[in-house]
Figure: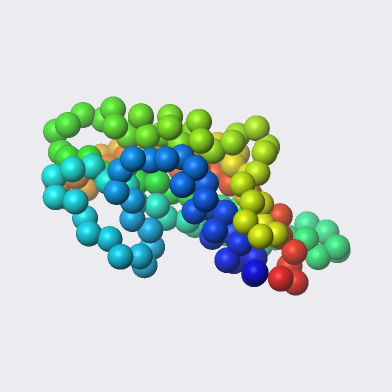
Length: 137
């Protein structure tokens, strides 16, 4: 398994472990936007691998952006509730979620912004992570 596939799968597993009970959209996956009910969009953003040693190990830092969409004029609590749920599910104590040879560790989870997005009220949650990978895989 390549580093890219392992990283993607570890991030997906992290979100599955969070047990978000709303319809969830992933990049380039089939999804029908619910009409008038909340939903979540997950967007992984990976940085360029940074060599950290001559041993062939690279560090990848990234952000897993979780956008919570709620109906307009419904208040902002759903976004904060999902953020708390994600924070409890993503280990912030240095333990890892692993897929194949790739482990992901989360550094922080926080609400990074809120506002209207068309007919939706959107809360952006940012989960910062890092991973060490073998640059030869």
